[in-house]
Length: 299
Image (tube, rainbow, N blue to C red; front, side, top):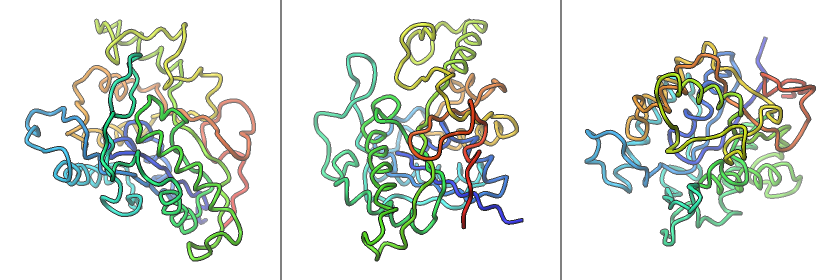
């Protein structure tokens, strides 16, 4: 029987797909669903975390290297359909600065080609073309704050949101393909119980803090964490944990797998990847384990 499920993810940089949705991508690819990844930039301004790659120069040089890492990560996840928004190098990594509260924010100065400075309509139309061609029922990206404030994540959210509206409008830009209405859009998040599990494991292993400081899941939550009861779908790592680990390992320039955060995230088998329903058909009940639960799939 043909699998009618079609999933599309919009991520800002190479490695984002693996860190927040790696197990989800691996699962649906393995199950036979159509999975498409749209990456908005090549991550030209990413911070190098591996000493033997310090020779990589921010800009096109680093971007091409990270594209190679993306190829390797996609192979690890079983992903074959992955494209860059507008084509390779159309939009560049905007970089980021640090706000006083520890979240990310836009730099005071960015280049004209930075994704943060992209024309929203132009970028959204590039995504409309992909949406109308792939016809996903489910689309995933970030929330309004881009999880932690990175300007490229925020822009990815805006582009995804706008494109999903435009894609379904009959008579609008017919040269971009036949209209397609997305059934559900989701925002990536982290459930508070998963974060509690990681913090407890950190303390049990003598790790004093994660993310550069303590996180009290009983107090005000950082923007990238959602109360577990407000999580609409949680995909368990389960048998896809190894694929997620392999994909993250492929992003050597950005991910140090010996860092306590990554070690805990990838070695605690009970963790999952969490999503909040942003628009579309409501979930049937409680927190689901399937993004497509309750959807009437059409060809």
